[in-house]
Image (cartoon, rainbow, N blue to C red):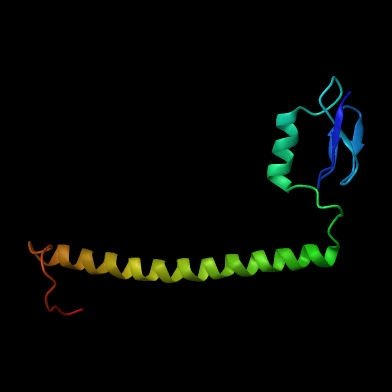
Length: 108
């Protein structure tokens, strides 16, 4: 007897297509392997009893997008700081032998 499981994604198995929420056979000759089922759950999350509405999907994507934009802004700031430090070090290296040691006064 093959077990069944529901997924948040359409599963194509053999010649049959199982839409999100439909029971998909696990094990046996015609079912997904346990590893394949776990992989689908890892990638798309466990079945939560219903599909997300378009508004819910948009809300999740908007939240993800805002988080990525914040990370991008921080990365741009970090890049500016690092670029300034590289320019400072390159200037110190071209100015003479004293490129290390304590920081002293200099002109930019």
